Image (cartoon, rainbow, N blue to C red; front, side):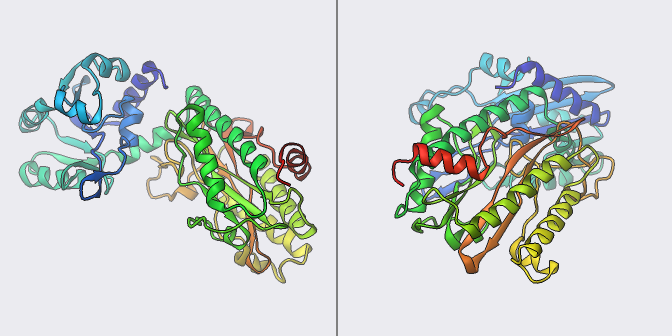
Length: 429
């Protein structure tokens, strides 16, 4: 878990970006309804977690900045013995203080009166909210609803501003501690992929492979997957976010995995493609090597100041030239039919992580210049449905002053290494 000292540093950086005479109001959120009497598993709003270390529903952070004086209050749900009999223990005041570094911890029952007093004082000219359109803070009530209510009652003397991009800009640059979390997430993902390679066999189902991955990381240290595990064989691998998982692994075919384990919230995002019978055939080998060479070329190309669009342009040109030379496509323009996604995205507390450029807020994520400390994916792929071949190879790359550093380089991807590993450890083939 990230140390409290770093959480304090994050909040201080955010406060420096906030205007004087302002209120910052952030929520962990509440669970969303799944069915008549059941909620989805709760996960704290990631911007809130990033700034507090708190993952408990219903928590609220109120920061007041007035003439350079900062006042922070964290509100957590009060002790309720009946609720705890049903859903488990809640954070104590001291536990919340230790996790967040906020000294002033109060029960949420006090929040509304405190907030009303602060906002009606007319001391503060701005109030910052996280205006993510899906941030639910109580039943049938979002932060966007709160914004409308504030404007309706106090709009004459207070501005409502969106703090999302300020926090996103901070989240983009990872600290040494965050990189360590990535490495732990990747290590578990590597071990689970090795387990998959040991158990792949013709006749097995895609969902069995996905279930094995999910079981391994859960059994390892109670980890959750970074996202819904993708296990797709044959032509199913040509669907990027294939979810059905009912296909059967075929002798002579391939299986593509796009998956990752979390560690303290940080997401590994890895893709690997393996031969079902332990050996690549000639066509599979040709296509695989093109994708692998592109993957390695992108790692070498990463540098501060480049953009994700720059990297994708390099990948597209590389794949087009190699596929044309191998007579896999007739013209370079045909590459769009067999490579139809971007080569990279930001990674962090979200698999497709937040991004923002405060110097130019109009920039799309693909046009934001890379900075030291960014973590991005490197995931070229080629998809030939007519051959029943979909191949993607994805690594997680740290942007450094010297270029791209492959955080997942320990996860084998060379044809020789994969075939040797499966021949040695897979007893099914």
